[in-house]
Structure formats: structure tokens, C-alpha cells
Length: 340
Image (cartoon, rainbow, N blue to C red; front, side, top):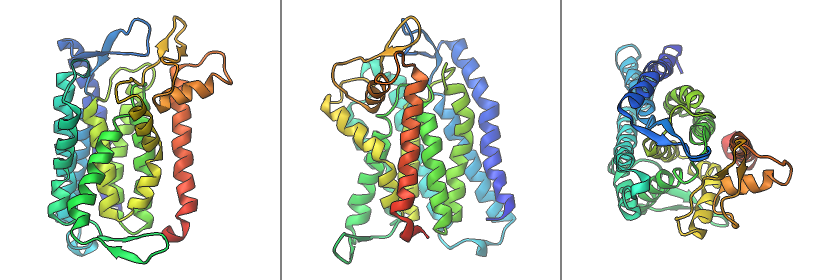
């Protein structure tokens, strides 16, 4: 990876650093604010849909990367078809972001888009990857040789992957810093996987999202000044799926997604109607919202209460981060032979 390409990551970082505070200020001015549900009396004082700045910063970084490759670096530097793959990835992220932004504007308390509509639109967001026939249709099945799925891969597997990652990444949310922090961990790890498997360009694209997410995290962590909204969670999920497909490391991506698979089953236990939030107390500590566990935030709170008398929002978030990092490190051990 040539050093000059790192400028793309810097552009993404600086874009978010410049425009995110302006977005927060504008949201307060026009009263586009959301409630902080894990605070007593749910104060409505946090800037909404800040993820739109992160998505734009990501796009600025990617476009600058393409410009640098086109005008300053020999086209022989990277394989043919990379530009097509990049534009397909951008379209997947942007379509997902637009769908999510509509849902943000409609408001989750008002029902937003219906679950069926969100899933349908998430499937449609995969079309750019389908039409370029992204990824490799050959998959290895335990105890069997590699199987070529043919058209099943682009027409079924890719849409399922994009829709699944996009919608389920949105499930594990609701705590200050959780969504952005998880995005930093997962995308940093997948960028590393892309690099060690020879997909340098894909690694840089992942880092173009990580860089603005780092800026966002410091505004989004407890006490949050801005919320990501579905526009960010859908975009991160779409990027994770796109990187896995284009980099041919779907197995690792699925393994890394274990916390979200668990979250999905727990949410289904509550018929997708139970919220991830906790019950806040005057001293800012949290209590279990239900007698049963309907999400990883509830499970984390339940576990922490076994060791601490008072559990706070940051404690729950950090425990989930630790679990996600453990899953990433475990995947290196499991897939060591394939990677190295």
C-alpha cells in the first residue's frame, strides 16, 4: 500500500472532525434532538442522526482514494476491476444510509418503517454487488470438497448477507458509544484481515470508515452529545457485509458477527418488541428493565450485577466491547491456517 494513499484516511478523519461539531450545533438550533433513554427522565437533549456526517466523511475519503489511484499511481498497482468493486460498495452503503435516514426521520417511537419494508429495502441495497457478480461462488463445506454455488451465490447469498448484516447490526444499540465503538472494533479487525489476505485496497476502505468513527465515538460516548441513528448502524452493517463478500472472507465475518447473532436470537425471544434500554436511577446506575433477558445489553447488565452493587452505562458498553474483542482474537486462532 503506497504511503500517499493514507491521505484518504486522513481526509475521512478531518471531514468528520470539522463537520460533526457543526451538525451537533445545527441539531440543537433546529431542535432535531432525541431522548437519552438510559438517563433519568429521558432528557431530550442529544443531537440526532449524526451518522450522516460519518457516512459523508467515509465517501469523501473513498473518492479521494480513487482520485489518487487514477491521477498519481500507476493503474498496475492494483488488480483490474477494483474501481468497479469500490463503486459497487459505495452504492450499497449509500442505499442503506438513505433507507435508514428515512427511518430516522419517521422516528422509532412512531414506528418508523415497518420491519418488512426495512428488510425488503435492505435486500435491494445488495443489488450493486449482485450485478457485478462480486465474490467467489465456491464455498467449502465441512467433510465435503468445495462446492460451486453458481448463480445461487450472487442471487441469494449476497442479498441475504447484506440484508442480514445491515438489519441485525442495528439490533445491538441504545447505549452511549456502543454502536460506534463496535464499528471501530469490527471494521479495524476486518481491515486487518483484508490486509493479510492481500486485499490492500479493501483494507484502506475499511479504515476510511474507522477514522471518522473514532471522531464520532468521542462525541457519542457517555455522556453522549450525538446519536448515530439508523443511518450509521445500517451503513456499518452494509460495509461489513460488502467487505466480507469482496474480500472472500465471509466465514471470518460471520464468526466476528457472533454477538449480533446472539442479539438477534434474544430479540426474537421478545418478538422484536423489547427495547435494549435499562432502567436508570438517580445516581445514574442502571437496573434490569425486564425479568427475562432480551438482548446483550440486558445480559451484560445481569452479569455485571453479580459482581458489582451498582452498574453504570459505561460498564455495560465496555463489557460488550471486551466480548467483541475476544471473538475477534478467537477467530484468528480458529482461522489461522487459512489466514497465514
